[in-house]
Image 1: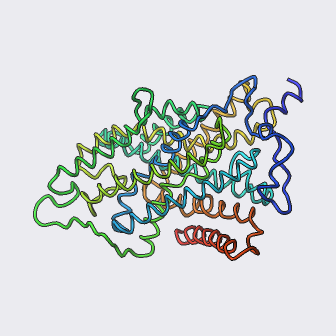
Image 2: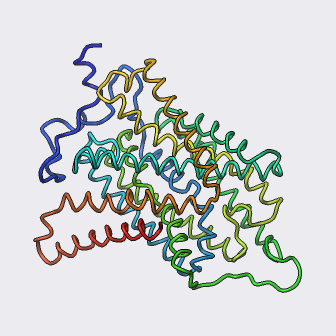
Image 3: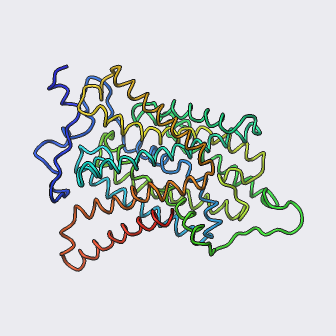
Length: 448
């Protein structure tokens, strides 16, 4: 293939401006030519995601393992405080995703938030954000592997060591993550969500959680509570946790609804990238309703006796049923997270070469090798930090507070510098984004 043909696949990121703005991202080149993946290529076409499929991917990606940790967070925060945080973080995460998505749409040569940081602040900032992205999604994959090993332990009555079940989870994760395009990932999503008349629905993960809720509702008292004599359910509307306990619980809820760093790369594979905002808002509403209804109902029946992950809250038999139903969903969640890590380095390694969208040996060896490497690293983390809620809190403060709150706020501030000296309304809007940046900083530092 000639050099001219190779250049059709991707374009170099635009040069960094001294005063970057969305307007300056518009160039005389067509938007299509600046996209990471091209449509008409002699190889794999990555640009095949409709807004409906994007909605399915976003919901599964967001719900993932987060729903398993929220009920125990309510036990720490109380029903009212926990409910407010669920709605508040859901709205905030939707807004920050929209900010980052609009920036990406105006700079289509950017594939991830790493490219966006490099575009605004140079290579050093880009490398730092790249490290955060990889660390964050390796930890996400590790949390899902913990869920898989916990499920297999429950089903087998601890028939083998946890390390072996984690290894099984790693293998399953790598298998699903190795599917190359996000659009093709919807067929395992159909397995994990269930598929009725070709419309994927949240059957596996929802059925697992509902089985626990129904099982808990049918018992006279929670499975973990004393089975004779008086006991205290421990359901409270308003709780007064210590700072450490409160920030850990809040971070677990925050990370359960964040999606910005992982959904931005999906824009590059959408048929119509401008649908991203519509999908993000729709998914935020769906996820918030799921979290509120399921977690509040479970907390009302189980109270302080809730387990983490929550599928173990209704006794041994229901625990086995729930984990049996949830294994496909947990596996696909781990695959989605591993896919994000591998796809970032895959695009970075093969960008501006014929191998990015061609079925060459270099293409396949790079893709499969990266999936294996990140799956293995996630397995090591899962064995090193085997406590589910602590893993979620570590994710939130160390990686996703910077990537999902601080960076989108900085992207917006960099594109709207002129508002600092504008009207009073403009200054208030700018100040609100400064407050968003400070909130992200507080969650990052306070969570540690």
